[in-house]
Length: 79
Image 1 (cartoon, rainbow, N blue to C red):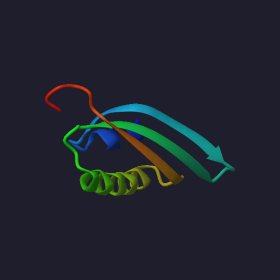
Image 2 (cartoon, rainbow, N blue to C red):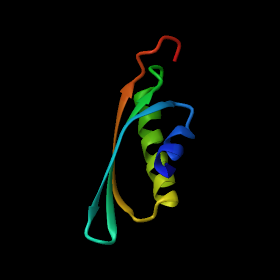
Image 3 (cartoon, one colour):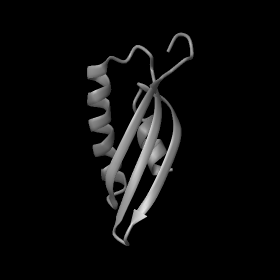
Image 4 (cartoon, helix red, strand yellow):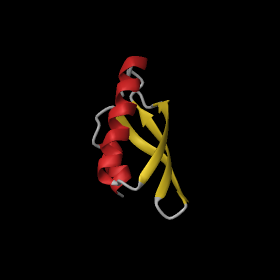
């Protein structure tokens, strides 16, 4: 819930499509996150969004050591 909420704090993120975690030993967590972003988001904005989102997630869930984020443009009109 904390990870999903962190992603949805950003206006460019329209939805979380998939969220998967995997423990690596007892002290590390791997996160794979698929998000849907506004189709008007530029490549530069997307790069900045991903970096800030990674920082925010690590603040909320410090045990996460590795984050992979994939983004897909929204297919909804007007987004």
